[in-house]
Image 1: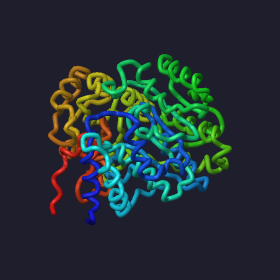
Image 2: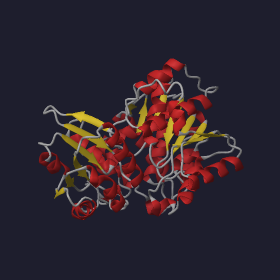
Image 3: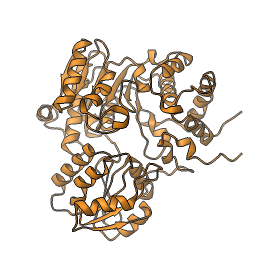
Image 4: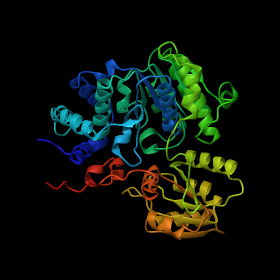
Length: 436
């Protein structure tokens, strides 16, 4: 039976988390049914708490500038599911999603009904099949959650990259930096080079120990590397010292795997100076002259980075802050970091069942900035109307919120039916039945 694109996407998300039993057994079995496509590809595997997506975007841009055919696998998506699987920055076509889901469905149905692959496991193998069919020269491969038990960990890469280790997803990864680092370091493979910009001593010790035990050559990237050639002369379109550190990590990776994937210096320059990654300190000028800054700071580490970057580039600006955060995040710490930036704060719900209450967020913002005017808005659209007269607006708190903002601001094509809710782990419950 022929599926539509929407039916194909709904099928994928109907897989949900299947009890959230993480592990590599099901993705390995699924990949075997697909013909082991990972064996036809070369990977750069990227894990970390923050900066994964930006680092992946930089690596993709560099290798594409060097003439390679580059696969890019990232998550979550901001607007369209198809953002997750790209070749040379072209989203996977809807027709290929339908075709691949048709094949995938047969493989998934061969599993016991109570132990089927999760959505992320299925999409991971689907991406492998697509990249192999597209004959990609290299695949920039971002982990979903953690690393050790993440479905992406069924590959053996040319290099393993860990951007940093900070607090996030503690319910899955552990309550200490050492525990979280152990999960991230699970992507390190015997003898495979590993690179990291992790700075926290507790986390770095875990990474160093695992690399030593597996005899994986380790490269440490620090802030000093951002001042070395060629980065000392490159102007990045992604702003912030954290992005320069991500760039240094990307440059170090290119150097480490240069024998397998040589890159001319000109391509390194072009790749870094033309990289694009929406929703990360993205400044938008509206026709009215209003400046809107979009940043997906979705955890305390991201909030700290946003505050430091904002104060560096806009030291005299007091923005209107539009804030929407997930319930399972450290909301109090995020409000403590971000609320003092603004004189006017508008709290909004995130379009997700996991959204924190805007009223609760407003109370936290008032606690951490008693002088601010704090307004509770029923939707992000209402907040953008309320702030239409403000000269500078900062929208942050969740990547889900950023996707909605991009749609409302006309920065992205809006699908016929919203796909933002498809980022949910139990997304199948959020979808409306497909009309036949």
